[in-house]
Length: 529
Image (cartoon, rainbow, N blue to C red; front, side, top):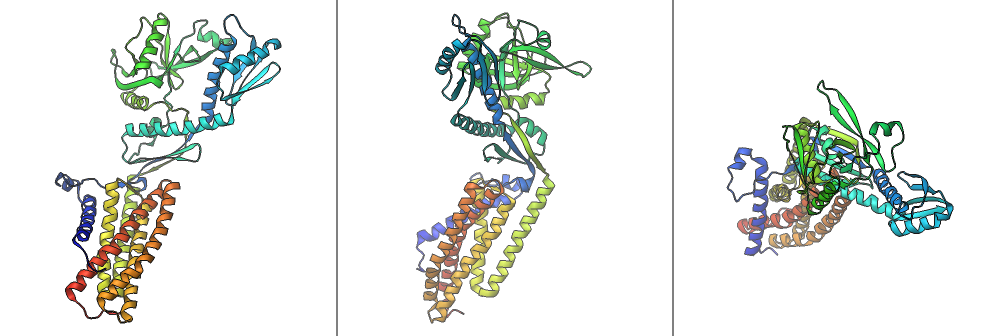
């Protein structure tokens, strides 16, 4: 039990060196880190939002808007089905909201035919309710759940892409409940810009301009079925903002789902612009669209606002277009990044916002460092007072334990938060607790008249099972916290889990190695009980 073969010594030494070289950059200056040899790691441990400052946002996904969009699309499909050439079925009152699409067949004799057509043409995720000539069509419960789940999952993925474009180091992006998303951006203090990038829907679409009447006439009278009035914001020379109305086809002729690239630049007039390119499928669709409608106007709409409505003088076959408007250079860069990440499937709104300044984060770092230092010193003193030389061995192992925690977390690229520092303090106590169990067992064996080598062997052997049981139960709790927790709770759970693993290693291997080396060197005849 007290014999240490060469492989075990090498293993202990390797683990300690691994922890030391990974933890070292955290105590060096930036200049010293750059001078380190290339084969050594140079990364520092990432600090969370509460330690370096930044922005904390809670977003809510407007799933109802996704339902409304689906029903508006269904409304267009119903109109096309009922207006089929040669087999037209009269109807009136066709309207949609977030819950349903409803209409009335004008001739009740055609109601059954209308039902058959709709059941054949529209998706099975819709339920058709008919009462004589009155129709109500709405999503089934399963379809609603699927759309809600898709909206949240897709929003999460797109927000991750946008944050990556934003260039934030170690962001936290996670769901909360069924409709909310938490985003933490360490080091980002400009919350307004973060919100404009993260929360923007970025729904890009191309709509043909309806020429049956002018937008002004549609505003005074009633807009034709299947159309909608959109507005373009224009800034005049004196800085006043006014709106130009457009009467557009409600259903887009092309959307940004096939967008392949987006970049910021300047157009021929040296105005800031966004240049977009479509993938192969999008290029083909864009070419077909512009070929069929040469001589007509097509509006480029982003998030419900018209940015330009050029005349299609000739087919656009290359799949490239530009968006111009009242942009600043920074706005074009941000918007291009948003378009590259993709449009959100549903709008999001910020329901909670917090900004933590770097000075407050620095105060938290100082307070946390002081807490760890005071706790560490207090434990060192108590162990020496109670266990003398054995206490010194435990203190050396404890120092190795802290170094290993920092080294492992740095190597994993983990983020240290204020609760994570609390986890380190707790781990220090747990690591000492393991040594206390071992030393008390050694004392019992010594009082029973065992020789030093025998007492040491029995002490470690008897305490090992208890140490393992206690740490495994704590590890299970930490894993559960990490799995179901969020933000700071995850930080605490991660630090605690790493600390448990390192404390078992240092208590059962490092402390034992030090004490065995001491006994073989000093060869005491009796241990003090």
